[in-house]
Length: 252
Ligand code: OAD
Image (tube, rainbow, N blue to C red; front, top):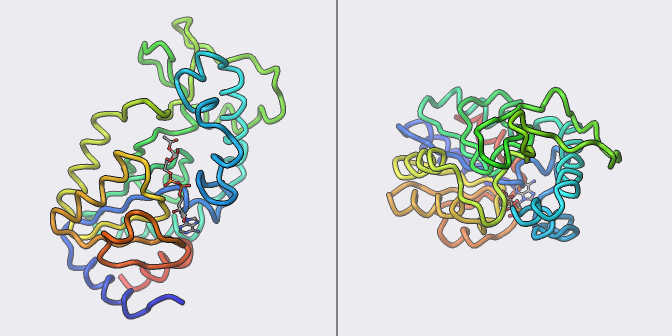
């Protein structure tokens, strides 16, 4: 049951706030059919992050890593932004000082119409030079998951001769400094911080709502379950993002 009184009060707070930040995790895309990482059907229940999402794994077996990312691309290519993504896009256009930060690599916020999204963990549709020459390719059109089940696909190569790798952040890698700086600034200066569909376990992203809370913002958690963030949240909206966010947005 959605707490409509809490939603009314939050909507008023959002309307009067000079700056708002929202950070999403895999939970917001769950209802689009994109698997989360840590739930019962989460990817890390069936797949090993060490074998698939580390620089060492790519050095050891780039074909296996690409196969897994192409499979994930094929799932995402079939997915559509859901009511939660669309509500956040509308909130962003209604609240001029609203910064949207995501840990998701699926690009669904962009497809929902959000602009200026801070994609902390990269984007699965981009590939970049594994040696670091700076080359980046947008593969959203050329590879809409077409390689599903095709293990004989050649490995993508960079014009410089090195391998291309998915432009995502792997375990053990640092986030893009400009992006995390922008996210920390948004967290530290907002009046309301919405943490949507994230297990709040992976840092530095998990630290952003804490930064916001310490700076005096109202931290709101939208999640179907408790997380380590729950005790630090000023308001907990227990429910699915695709149901809760449209209810909130319609009140703003
Ligand atoms: P997780 O899979 O860790 O957590 C998903 C969260 O969404 C959980 O807290 C669920 O309770 C919640 N959830 C599930 N369905 C929901 C729904 N319909 N509405 C609202 N909440 C829902 O995903 P993240 O927190 O995004 O990093 O994971 C963080 C990072 O860990 C990912 O970006 C990825 C992963 O390893 C990298 O790959 C670097």
